Image (cartoon, rainbow, N blue to C red):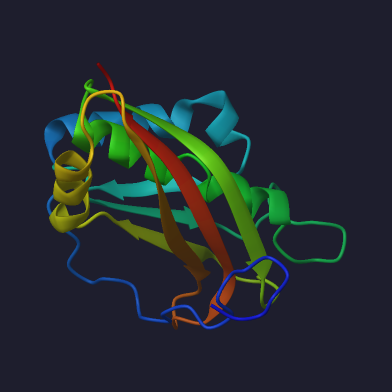
Length: 172
């Protein structure tokens, strides 16, 4: 982390987009289409491109078009944040199952470079992370988990970085 006011690392991992994302299943393909039709998500202008069959990988894209463009000719910050807002919470809830409550607790976004092209974000949830949550929490206990996601262009240039903190509780 840096000394930025939001606490977001100014140099998140700028890696190119995965050319070989994990396979998408029939159910996650349906979820993807449903997610993209949800009015709250549709309003961001973003689209979910891929959901792995096990929900451990999601890729979204925010196109640069008339729906996402702001008054100064770049992608609107609200579209960027709205595009990434529900993803980690949904992934954790799907992977952990009904025995857990998962809520967004806080977020900080840092706009690093104006977006004038389609931007992408890739979300990954390693098995070690969810295994640790299951092992760490007894019924009624909770924890906070923090995740960093970057919005990048096709070349891997980071345009925005968001740090999401999620509240996770094992239900009784």
